[in-house]
Amino acid sequence: MARLILNITVLILSLLGLQGCATNPVTGKSQFMLISESQERQLGAEQYGPTIQSQGGQYYLDPDLQVYVRQVGEKLARVSDQPDLPYEFVVINSSIPNAWALPSGKIAINRGLLTEMEDEAQLAAVLSHEIVHAAARHSAQRLQQGLLLNAGLAGLGIMVSDNDFRDIILGGAAVGATLTIAKYGRGHELESDAYGMEYMARAGYDPQAAVELQEIFVKLAGDRESSWFDGLFASHPPSQERVARNRDKAQQLGTSARFRGKAEYARATAALRKRIPAYKAYDEGVKALSEGNIQAALGKTEEAIRLEPEEAMFYALRGDIHQKLGDEQKALADYNRAVELYPEHYAYLLKRGTARQQQGLNELALQDLQKSAELLPTSLAYYAMGEAALGLEAHQQALQYFQIASEGGGETGQMARDRAQTLARQLRRQ
Image 1 (spheres, rainbow, N blue to C red):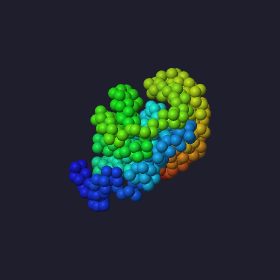
Image 2 (spheres, rainbow, N blue to C red):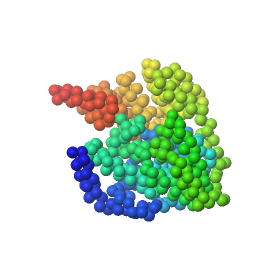
Image 3 (cartoon, rainbow, N blue to C red):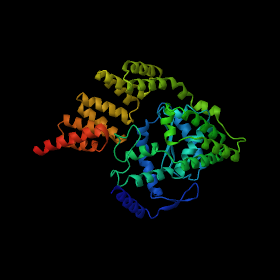
Image 4 (cartoon, rainbow, N blue to C red):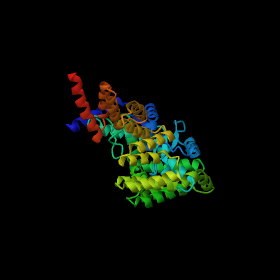
């Protein structure tokens, strides 16, 4: 039966997408596309903000670094095969070394990857690779494949899988999170390597940097315990084949009089590198907390705050620790500080809103939770909204919140379904 439904769904999608055959803007080859370029641009615009939220939020402590990365990205985008795409470049506040692209040129790189590179040419190698993914419409093809695989089987469209957010992200915001973690195929990776190196050469960068980058990735990928394996390698698997192909491509393009930008890169990343010890202490604190070692987690988090008192995520973690210790007032104070430092991140608003709800501050809780859900809709936020609405005797509103939360998976989704069913029965009896 499932096979029949899948076949019918594919047929319907094919009929809807009779515009289907399109020319790849980068390779010039014909390819089957169900998603139009205008739909692709709309998808990228809609998904970029929520996906940034789900991956850690912007690295707000260093605006100059954001400008630098954007300038390098724009320099490469101008010489790409799709220079008119609405490109955007952002640095994500995450220690996991990663980079990703959404449809229509929405590109991000984590601070954890920036600290592993040595010069601007290596940064250009990463960004040009992601630009090719966007220009060649690889992200749209991945989404299209997901549609064909999931339609008629899940009945719920694209679902988030294999990441920490699979059980809480609701609705369309799940699409972008899916695109950022899904593994590219061998063909897409080789295309992005080769054409990305051409973009590097056109922009004046030494394409040898792309060879060096792959050599680093292959070495680090051998350590499966490393966060590298769960980061960049999950979606961009390295291989000796890619190293060899990149080396051949670099020789074809030549490396004479090419720009490396070692001094420029050192200046641009100097402030970030000074903060490495603070983020290392924070990451160790997260690990200790996950292992149940609360006092060690608290010590590491206090160390991170001493080293960098303006980082919101450090206070959010300390708030989590105080919650574990049963000190609700200290937890709320830390969440207040996190929101004060970075008021545009869903997670800090969610944590503070949930803490306020648990303390009976239901009106304030709803304000936080609603803003959190606007930035990134999650079942956790809607479930807490339901509890806050109940505290305000707004039963019908609470039912609506629980019903939305029930669309999520995992424990929260099940709890929301139970609450919605119980509340619906109570309302019918009234």
